[in-house]
Structure formats: structure tokens, C-alpha cells
Image (cartoon, rainbow, N blue to C red; front, side):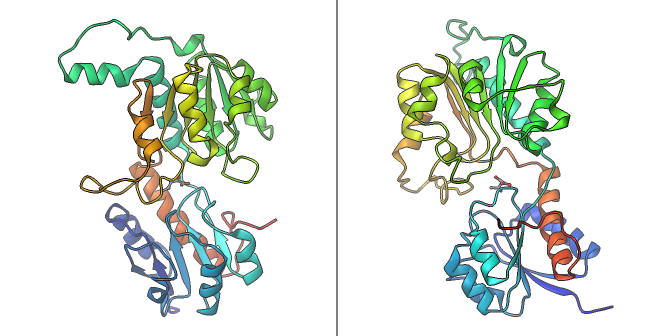
Amino acid sequence: MESPYSIAVFEAREDEMSSFAHAERTYPVRLTYRREALSLDTLNLTAGCQAVTTLGESHLDAPLLSALAEKGIRYLSTRTVGYNHIDVKAAARLGIHIAHSDYDPGSVADFTLMLMLMALRHYKQALFRGNANDYSLAGLQGKELRTQTVGVVGTGNIGRAVIRRLSGWGCRILACGHPKKEVEGLATYVSQKELFQNSDIITFHVPLADNTYHLVNTETLSWMKKGVILINTARGELMDTEVLIEGIESCKIGALGIDVLEHETGIYHQDLRSNIIRNRSMAYLRQFPNVTMTQHIAFYTEEAVAGMVDGGVRSLVEMIEGRPCALEILAG
Ligand code: COI
């Protein structure tokens, strides 16, 4: 057998190990594991490797990519679907091939539906009250999903998986984004402004990019219905957090279900019980009765983690061997 491709795995987590062991049995690879994120400080841990895989905490900006290129690393994969932590243009300039992952969108889509239902049924309050032996009904009357108009912003893999699920609940579904055949008959495509104006619930499934940064801002919030429910399982930066706070305080926003938050890096996925956390907006938002915040776990299922690892290793092998790689990100 040819000598295996040597790959440095950064941000390796315990729960990924059985999937990595499976990948080592499936592909011609030798993996070395690092808990750390890849940075200029940990760069030397790539010694002897020809490719690297990371998660989203490794900020692959131009200086880091150029240092990787100097070390002869030409192949990099992120085990995440989103790749806003990578300077794709700099990578292309440096001749580094980049791929992202394609785990099943079901994990995030299921979680999105859960956040919608939790918001509609005031579940955060019901849970808190039950824990304090308060079994009163006042303030807990909800609404049924079938009576709602749900706007789905973005009809990529995750947006479409959300639409498929919603179609079983009998609600009216609006969508915006590049029209996809599969969406026909399930949702009606409208402009983004019309979607904002006419939806009772709006859920966001677009990548973070220059044109999606602060998609929810003072102006776009003003187009929305009073009492709108906003769901974000994509990226925190899609929403201006200060505008969210003002929206909750003025009751323009009826409820928020957010799995992601601006400046979550270094906080989410860490145990900080004994630490001082410097994110005032996070603490302030969390205390509202109609705001449900989770710590970027929508993706986190056994099935998704297996897919992340498989995609992260398979794409590297395909790119190293010069084979077509559906997961390769092409700058442009
Ligand atoms: C992604 O796959 O893009 C995610 O958001 C999950 C990741 C942060 C582990």
C-alpha cells in the first residue's frame, strides 16, 4: 500500500474520535490529533503533515494561511458547513485548496423547528416555573404553528430541510433566496422585504458574508410585523445584537430563539462556570422571558458529527489526489 496521507486534525474533540477511527479505516490517511485551534502559535504542530482539518475556532486569515503555505501545506478542510472563518481569496492566491463539510442538514433543521415551537408555546417560562413548583397557566397561552406564516431566508441545504419539515405542520411558508425546484409547491418565493413584512416567524439560513452581515438591523426590523418571532441557527453576525435588544424591549420582537450570537467565539463550547465573561449583551439578552438562547449546538448530533468528520477527511483525500471534490470551495 502507498504511504498514507498525513493529516493534522485541529480542534479534535473526544466525541469525534470514533468517527476519525472509522475514517482511518476507510481512507489512506494517518491522522494526528490536537485539541488546540490552529493559529500562528500552534502552527508548528503541523510539522510532517501535508494537510490540515479544523473546526470553526481556527481563524484562517491571510497571515496564517501564508504561514501554512510556507510550511508546504496545500490542502485544508473545515469540518463545518460555514466557512466565514476562512479567507478563501487569500487561500486561492496562495494555492491552498480548501473544502468545507456537508453533514446532513437534519440536525440544524430539527433544532430550528424546536426553537420555533418553544417560542410559540412559551416553553422557557413553563420550564422555569415548573422547576419552582409554579404550575399556573397565566401568560403561557401559545399559538399553533399551522396558523402562522413562516419566512425562511435562504433555501440552501438547511433552509430546504426546514421547509420540508414545516410543510408537515400546515403553516404558510414564504421563502427568499436562489429559487430551487424542490421548494416549488411547498413554499412561495417572495422578495426578502416581502418576506420580512408578511411573516409571523422568520428563520435565517444564509451564510455569513458581506451582504448578510447584520441582515436584521434597525431598518429591516421596522419592516417586520409587531410581535415577530426570529430564529437564528446560522451565524450570530446575521443579526445586530443591540437591535435585537431594542426590539425585545419595545415588544416589536415577540420572541427570539437563537443558537448563535455575535462574539460567541471563546465562550460557546467552553465550560466558563468559574470565569468572568465579558459579553454584556449576552447576559442581558438571556434574562428576557421570551428569549431562548442555546450555545451553538443546533448541529450537534451523532449523525452530524460523523458527517463532519467524514467530509473533513474525504475532501482532503480527494483534493490531494486531484480528484473532483464536491466540497471544495472555489474563490470567486
Ligand atoms: C457549521 O457547521 O457551520 C456550524 O455552525 C457548526 C460548527 C460551529 C461546529
